[in-house]
Length: 254
Image (tube, rainbow, N blue to C red; front, side, top):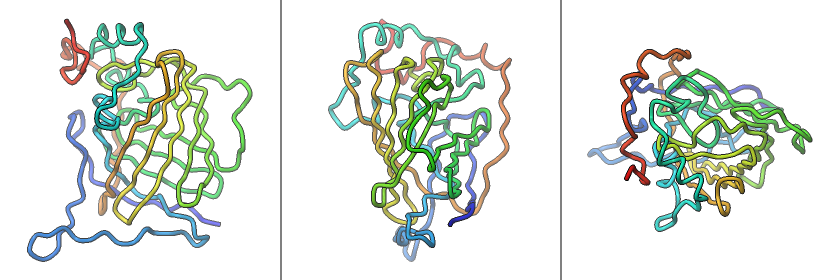
């Protein structure tokens, strides 16, 4: 039985939208050191714990997280709403949770326990997401929440997380892509070596998209620091300075 395992991470500047932090491990001659082997727990399971960099493709515009050449299968009403949304109205900009699968531009941490996995988020509201390992099914009628109801199982060396029961309040990204309460997210996490975390996220929301689509993400292990306490509260006085439409929105304004 494994106990809690916690590590640490460098932080990004409070309030900036910096690119994900990167590990800077270099060997002789400036060459990047080869990552160590995938760490494992005493029971042989892959150890996913650690503090990880965010993936910008899960922050600014989820279109960037698709395979090259793929496009979001957005329904007409959802595409229209994305065009109309203004950055100042983004719930994340108003200190509310990011939801799933969106990330904040700050480090995040995976903590393991025998019955749950916790994702701790430095950014925005310094919140957490809990994933149940000791449940085989979701509640029959879950109360809609920002992070939904998440259960997980191991498939070999991959952790497969199944989540439902979301509210429709959060945006998928800064670009403003919407979703509905029909949202169903399936995530597959793997750790190919000591320094990297890979994940595939299948988004299935028949209320806003014409078919499921898959996002691909990557994070780098951050070493030698801790998550910073970053408290963001509603009534953010800076929102009035956020003007117009986020320029990263591929749909844009006509």
